[in-house]
Structure formats: C-alpha cells, structure tokens
Length: 210
Image (cartoon, rainbow, N blue to C red; front, side, top):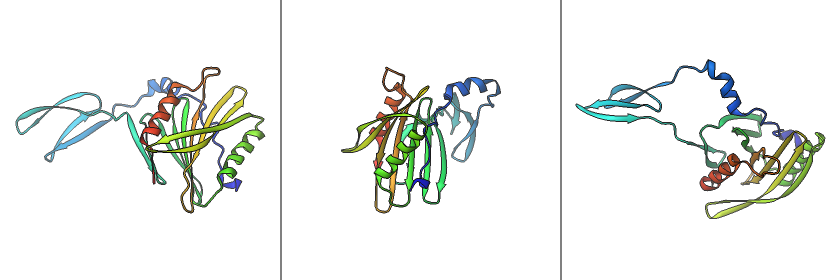
C-alpha cells in the first residue's frame, strides 16, 4: 500500500513573492495577443485599453486575466486562484498527483485508480511524519459544498521550524479513491492564514464531485 503514497509535507519552502522579487530584473517582455474580429487581426496586450475599429466604428477593448481558474480532473471540479502554480506528476501507473501551490498554501489532489482504504492513506501519512520526529495532533473537520458535506481528517504537524496544517478529504467512487488535501503554513498562535481561509472558501463555493 505504502508504495502508492507520496510525501508532500515540504511542498511549501519558498514564498512565490520571494521568487518574483529575485527574478524581477530578468522579467521577460510582456506577452502580446492577437484578437480576431470578423477575420481581422488586432494585436493587443494584457491589462491595457485598446481602441479597435470595426466596420468604421471604434470600440474599446481590454483583455484581463481572470482571478480564478478551474481544476477539472479525476471527477473533481473547483475554482482556484489563477496565480497558483499548477503541477502534475504520475506517482505510479495507479496514482495521479496534482499540486496547486500558493505562497503559504497548497491544494493537493491525488487520484488512486485502485481501491485504497481511507484509513490506510491517513496512517501512511502519519507514519511518514513520525519518521521525521514530527509532533502530530489530529481531529475531524468538515467541508461543505453545494448541499452536501464531507467529513475529513485535520492534521497539525510540528517539525520545529516548520509547522503545517493539512485538511484531508476523501471522495471515493467505484474502483477509485480520490484525495483532496488543503494545506496551510499557519502563523504560530494566529490560526490559519488569510490565504488559506480564502482558498478554502473558494473550494467550498465551487466544488463539484462526479
């Protein structure tokens, strides 16, 4: 069973904002786009107003990035902050792993194409943390979506300088086990970060399970 699982507890190591600051001097030129109207091409850039003439009449056009994107994999669909970094890894022929990384938070989706007991997955995670001498606390938590709710496991992981919270939810269907992990790096004594609170609200508001 354990060979299916991945260690995801150190995904948050460097804030995205820090990377942006370091790479600002090497920022690439702005991306241009071609807007086609009635087979006529117009060159436009992001977040800028453009005047385009169509059939002799001027029109103001502006292209902006949506604040959210939609994750729609393995029968799970939900919106997430468009600034998050999307990554995918095939952990094995039986396990797909997606990660949506923010500054202090991560959304992790794992799809097991075989039936795996929820308790076995939780126990494997706990075993990995114990090997790292982490202090663990666990409790139940709930995620509401649509007119439904799912009960999950909340892990508080203390590894000295690194403190994480993971809320783990299972969405099983015939022959498959799907796992959603909402991860935070909370400020000690201050509870969840604002980024985590907003992320969780957006997931709850938009989640569709098929």
